Image (cartoon, rainbow, N blue to C red; front, side, top):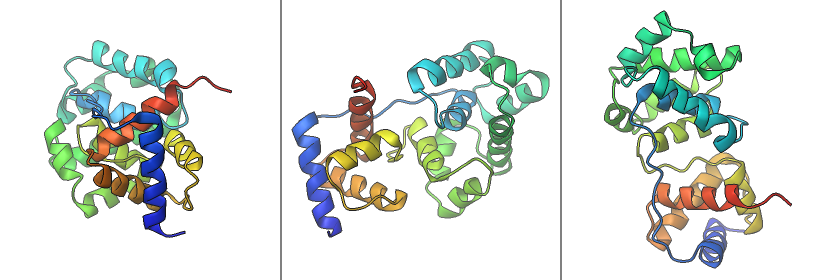
Length: 204
């Protein structure tokens, strides 16, 4: 099966179950502590039940940690494990490492991060952090308002329903991107529309 055929199949499935839109992209967070924590702790967790409440706790407990600089200061003085209600050391370490990398790169705000992620070298630097994969990097972009496709279990399930011939992360991301372009949707908005549809469906 060619990529063009996969795009056609995905486009048809999107239109069949979601219509023609318009679709709204996820807003994400304006609080950089929330952005970084969300990107790391969301892995293999139910978003609405487990992730969102903890990210909201970061915002309410550390309202001043809205930039990378102020978030790192809070990491020194506060107890992130208590705020997030997790003792998962790899994730806690990854949060600190991402914050350190962004600070070293001059990234302090949501707008800074959205621009910074457009460079392949910067994305590679994130991928060098233990616990950060391709999906996490793309998801970071979505959390700051970028037009990114982060392929998670929901997007994979939707692709299987459309009978796509690819399953590798980069291949699936490319098919979703091309599908959004063909249908005239923002890439991030199409991703979010699929994610909301799949995550809200009752489990069989």
